[in-house]
Image (tube, helix red, strand yellow):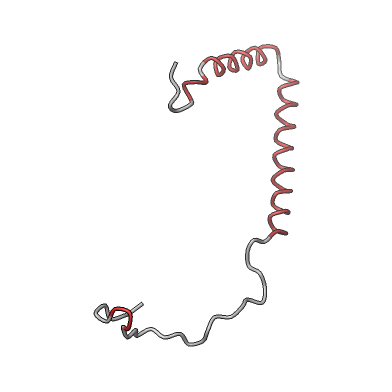
Length: 88
């Protein structure tokens, strides 16, 4: 806004509004329909990824299962290392 800083509360501003603001005819946000559709697609996608991971884990060989078990135990043992502010 281009205003004269010397005038205080009664300063003369160069910027004038051409027309007063009006009430919008349509809502712009939040777009609930879009959010529901996106949540549905994301939920379906996440569910499919989870199903593929579970199927892969169920059909993997014993060696792979042993590796996964070892990785889980290592994560459980060192979980406090990943949390900031926590010390042993």
